[in-house]
Length: 270
Ligand SMILES: [Zn+2]
Image 1 (cartoon, rainbow, N blue to C red):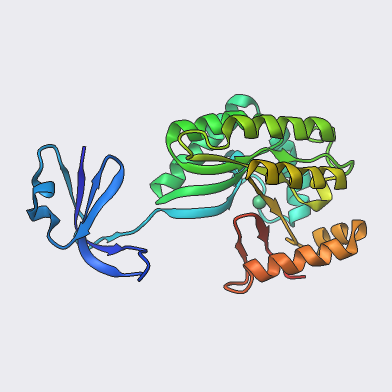
Image 2 (image 1 turned 45 degrees about the vertical axis):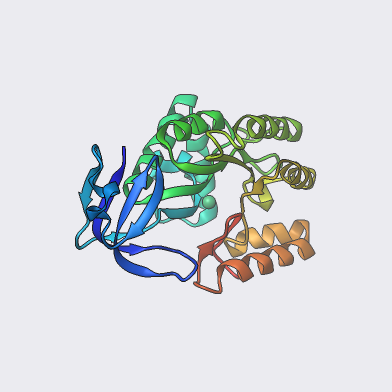
C-alpha cells in the first residue's frame, strides 16, 4: 500500500545534500518520489494511499548504529561505573556465559525494537560466543538491516565459560556466515568478530582475516579502547598494537573524541 508523507522537512541525502520542504511518496517499500505537491497528484490521491501529516516534522533516512552488542540489552544497569576490564570480567562475561538460546533471541529482539522505534534502521552488532543464530532469527523476523557475528574468544586469558578451542570457534563462524551472510534478500550480513586482541590468539586472527576476505564479509572488533587493553596487546605484538591504535585513531578520533567505524571501536588514542 502506498504511503504519502506530507508537509515535512525532508533531509534527502542526495548528492547535493539538499534539505527541502516536500512530500515523500513510498510505494512497495521504496521511495518513488519527493516533491512539493505530491498530495495533489494522481499518486497522492490513489485509492488506498495512507497519508501521514508530517507538518512540523523532519523526514530523514534511517540512522545507522555502527557498534552495538544486542546480547547485552538485558544487562543494562547491572554493571555501571566500572573500568572496562572489571566491567567485562566481573559482570558482562558471566552474564554472557549465562545466556541461553532463548535469552539471546529476546535480547536481540528487544534491542532491535528499541532501535527501530528510535529511527535506527541499520546496525553493526557483535553477539556473544554462543547462540548467535538465535540473534539472527530475531533480526530476520523484526526487519532491521543488520550485520552481526559470533564473538570470538579463544585465548587462554578468557574465562573458561566463554573460551573456545580455535578450530571450533572458526568452524562455527564459517557455518554462521554460510547461513546468514546475504540472508533476507541481502538485509542480513555476517561479520567475523574477534572480541579484541587480548581475547584472541594470533592463529585465530590470521584465519579470521582469510575467512572474511573469502566471504566478502567485514571484521568487527574493538581496538585501543583503554590503556590496559593497549598494553596487553603490546606485550604480544608491540608493532601490531601501535599500528592498530594508529589505524583506529585515524578513523574514529578525528571527527570526535570517541566514535566507531564500520569495523572497529576505539575509545582511546593511547
Ligand atoms: Zn563493543
